[in-house]
Amino acid sequence: MGHWAERNIIEAIAGRQRRTPSDLIQGIGDDCAVVRKAGGLVDLWTTDALVEGVHFDPAWHPPYLLGRKAANVNISDIGAMGGRPRFALLALGLSGTTSDDFAGKLMDGFLAALVEHDMVLIGGDTVYSGERLMLSVTVCGEMAENEVCYRSGAQVGDLIWVSGFLGNAACGLELYRCGKDKEDRYSSLYCAHLDPQPQVRLGRLLAARGGVHAMMDISDGLATDLAHICKASGVGAVIVADDVPLADEFLHAAAMLRIPPVQLALQGGEDYQLVFTAPESSSQSIRIIAREAGASAICLGRIVAGQSVLLYQNGKSQDITFQGYEHRF
Ligand code: ADP
Ligand code: MG
Image 1 (cartoon, helix red, strand yellow):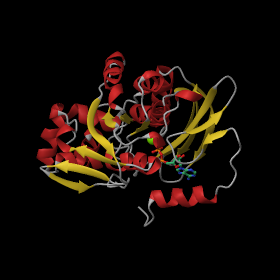
Image 2 (tube, helix red, strand yellow):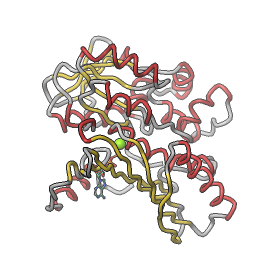
Image 3 (cartoon, protein in one colour):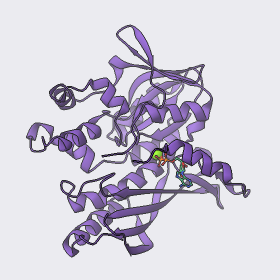
């Protein structure tokens, strides 16, 4: 990748953006932009691109699952605000080597993911993209204005929760990279990388009645994404290593790969679980909602005064602020 850091580029872009119309509630800086409309509702807007060789390798990513993933990573951002995804636009950059069969399966997967969420494809663009396939997706969602969960609402004393195992997707990708891609016992790890599941139902319920202060989805690793919440909220965070949810097959694979598991779980990207903060008084309703959504809610830390994300492990604390994943391959 280039010598630039994604975060600095986004800050430079945001700094050049001067206009803030009165119906724009949230522009650059959260999982979605939030635009007020009639009836106490807002539109949510998000866009995310997948680039061959950077975000996926067609040698091991089946086209159907790639299409699903392109939709689901965007749908995840809508769920991360607590919203209902509704419409999608798809810009498809086809490379010289993309076959009709591959493109067909890609579209089947993409549209299947939309159908699962009762969404509609309303437009897009199709271009020749040279040597690398690219999918750029925009999704629009909707929700009540007074229920939107921003990154900026975390308060000192809040508990920090995640919606499931961390690190599975990064571990699955690592297994593919080193050619250990055909072991039945790791199927859930391959699946986490190839076919991530957005936590939309959980996100919507948490926003509606979970008493949540801040929420986002984990795309760049908890170390980075929690740092975004902390920066936006003006707070710090402490994570307890023993409370980080790690799957058995993940622990097995991490040992085999000789990667420290907690590090992989907090720094690896693309889990698309939710991270959210809430006062202790919300804990009971959060557990009930998670059960209702068929999801998990695991408490692994606390919001504190400060501006760093600290990891407590073996009696020591370590600063892991923005130590997450940047895509390379
Ligand atoms: P996420 O991982 O939730 O999709 P990103 O880290 O990609 O969020 O982006 C962070 C914020 O910066 C989002 O609000 C996103 O819309 C905005 N952003 C990223 N790239 C650009 C860009 N090139 N132009 C304008 N806004 C951008
Ligand atoms: Mg996000």
